[in-house]
Image 1 (spheres, rainbow, N blue to C red):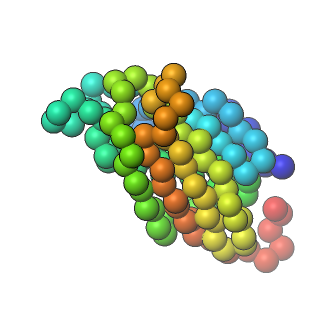
Image 2 (cartoon, rainbow, N blue to C red):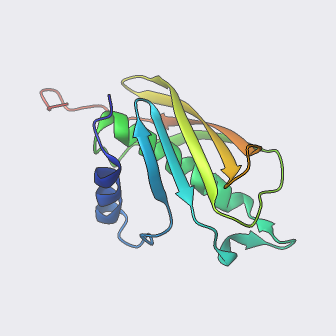
Length: 144
């Protein structure tokens, strides 16, 4: 069962990343071990050749995984990426991009997930990633 709602995650992001534009990502769904987020299309995400850049898609993957971990463990801003592997499968369309993250394992120290990325309106995956996050140790006696 998630410990944080979409609104609570977004509020935490405004607090810990005040320079991040509020309209960069929109959380569409938070469920048990699952988060779906949307990255609205922006011309500044384009690379030469007119496609969305790899770094913008990797940032989307990392953000989706971070949100999924936070949803399940609560407001632990110091959870960090330890591994991210991405396969670019097809050219994304010049539209919003959707990331669906599933946590495959959530332990006390590590979380492992996979993220599927789609162009809005298309059933074809444009990228697939696996990601591992390190979860900081909880203080003894701290509330969960």
